[in-house]
Length: 319
Image (cartoon, rainbow, N blue to C red; front, top):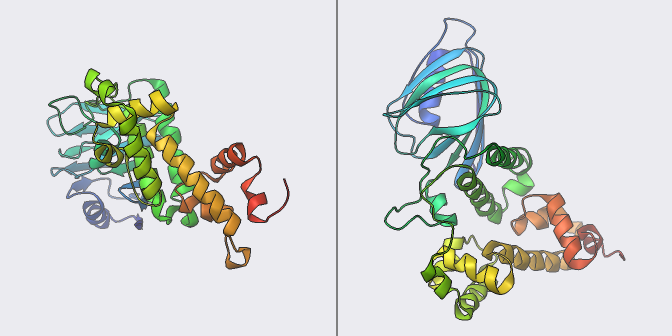
């Protein structure tokens, strides 16, 4: 977990900080009133930065940042251009590809407040497979495919920023890093055009047989306490991620990660039953230990499965 905080009105200090936090760049701005504020919270292979500039700051980064970088604008506006790419103007409510992982970028931050969301490109490979001959999975456009997809991604970003990364008891749980990172990657692929192939092929349908499911279920049961992804499960089952998804839909009417959540919920139930309240055990901590990002959603899922709130199980009170 990484945390950064920066607040300065000095252009030289701001340029040095941005170059260290992102990639080497040159910036420009007015001679006065040049306050820049940046904060970062991260877990696993993702981070969400909050930035605010009260002036028009030009920036030119010739080197790639090495991570997928999304922008989420709250106020002001941002002019952005990828190296060798098209220019875009973005304002409040816009979420967009600020910079690909493998190209430089430049632009002007026009008195803007916004988020920068950074994620490892390899995360996309963990949640989807590319079209044949187009490895690895990559985004192919810089704007969401629809307003609804953009809204869903913005809600995911806000949840991760305000309720996961902001809560140490949640953020620092080992399984939260993988759960949060995979959720963000899946939401990004849902929002942006990409070369991912999401529908099963004929070969995938043939591979979705009971033996595939058996291998996958055994692996999930044995590794529910570890950082595992769809690609990990598919590799053990010896099929593609699409075939794995299809097998779970066909035979169990769920998804591999949906089943993983059920198994982890059962483990959380056992931990609640065995918890020592005097040791500081809480529902939030136990939920986070098993990768549940949102305490309220965990409580709702727990009640559906066990017929009572998790707090009653923890305190051994009758339903």
